[in-house]
Length: 124
Image (cartoon, rainbow, N blue to C red; front, side):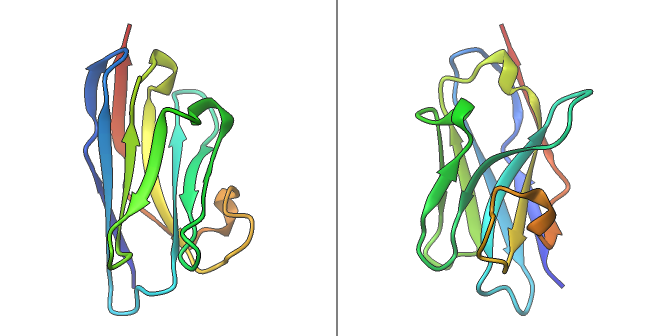
């Protein structure tokens, strides 16, 4: 069983930065690509960023390109989401997820494990 635990959320002003972390644990956590998704009140969960386990290739949704950076540690068990120049529209619960499916990493349905979420609130 894989467990994902996010941390790093909080309340910040517009223009500020936050770094989210997602620590994965489990006896068989290997070969998983990791992604970040978010869900704002009254809205559907949306893709934010992903990093491929094998190639390290990163993908972002258009609204965060140039502001957010996804990365991972050398053991590939912790994912980070560096969020700069935050905007009020970035306010949401942020979830990390993991999948062994190497395709369509922007699709939440392809992920096997999810964290509990961490709240990010950006005030104007």
